Structures are given as C-alpha cells and as structure tokens.
Image (cartoon, rainbow, N blue to C red):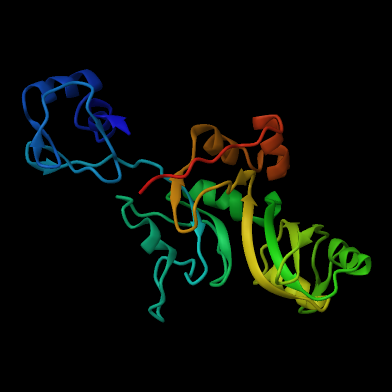
Length: 263
C-alpha cells in the first residue's frame, strides 16, 4: 500500500508536495470517489486512481513478483494450445511482466516474474551458476549408491549433469522425500536425473531459487519481493559469485520469512 501522494508522484503527475495540492483541490479520485484527505493509502494493483478524470499508473516501474506456481499451468505469457498460463494467476498486476525461466507444466513452486530484463539475464544465464532447490517425492530404491550417482552427475542425452546437492528428507506415502539443488536448467532435469537412476518423480516443488525461499506462500498466490530481496538478486554475477554466496552475504545466513500476499 502506498500513500496517495507518493503514488501520484510515481505516476509522474507531480512531486509529492504538488500531489498534496492536487488532492486538496479535489482533482484526484480513487475508485470513483473524490479524495481530499492526506494520508489515504492505495493498493497499486487493485485501486483505480484518476487525475482530472484520466486514470494514472506508475511510469516505467520495475515489478518483482514471487509466485507459488501450482501444477497444471504452463510457464509462458501465452500458449498456442490454449492451456492455462501462469499469467492468469497474476492478472491484476497493471503492467506487462513475464516469467524468469520456466517450471514444467506438472512442477510446482517458486517462480519469479518481472519486467526487469537485466535481472532476468542475471538469473537465467548459465555463467552465474544460480542455484535452484527442489523437494521431490520419488518412488524407487534410494540407496547410498543412488545418492552417490546423483551427487556426482548422471548422463542425460549423452551429457553428464553437473554435480548436485542431494539429501533424503524422509519417507512419504508415495515413497521418499528428497531435496535436490542444481544450478543447470536443462529440460525436466530433476525428473530425468531420477529416471537415470531408476526412480520416478511423483511430485516436484521448487522451494528456493537465487537465494529466495518460497516459505509459506500459499499455492497459486503471489507476493512482491522485498527491497532487500531485489537488491540480493541484483548482486548476482558480481565477481561471478553464486546465488548462494550472495544470499549469505546479504542476509548473514538468516532465514528470509515470506509473508503471503492476501488477494
């Protein structure tokens, strides 16, 4: 939520002080109602703000969103097969944003969306070794030999994957709950890694990416990234540090608590 005068300033209507004068003169409406009082707050994603009868929106504002993607959505802006896309889950955002990278149709979890092309490049370029962590429920024999193979890299389409961080979290009704951290982005990589050692992934959730943690954000919901989180992401690639290194420097190893956005 933003104070109305700051919102008007972000839209380029006037300075904050000038915006206060416009509000006092009755030239500003919020959701159809004239507002003359100072201190009124608006939700930039939902409220309709008008100046002299014309709707106004922030100019060239960078938007950074974390979405908890459910299964059954494609990670594209549009789909020629008319499948549901993740954009339908953030349809109230009053700007063109797009997904940073992809999550498979049947994979859930943390997905970043933004309109910041430079940041998208930092996160998705292989040279920056951005780590992505998944929790997987798998069937099959998870032996020490299986773990050793996954950690050392397995061959997919004739190419060995980079070493991965893999650990067993516990048993589930489907089989075994696993935690896997990789920094590559090959197609359906985690699922295919397990297939290469004779296991099948029944459910896959991305819980962390580039130092961000999904936390308790409800499935299908989104929230804006905090300023410290955005600053952390912008440091990716500085001196070729990994996203994990940047996260430790920014937050000192402290857990980032995610508060889900109510919609």
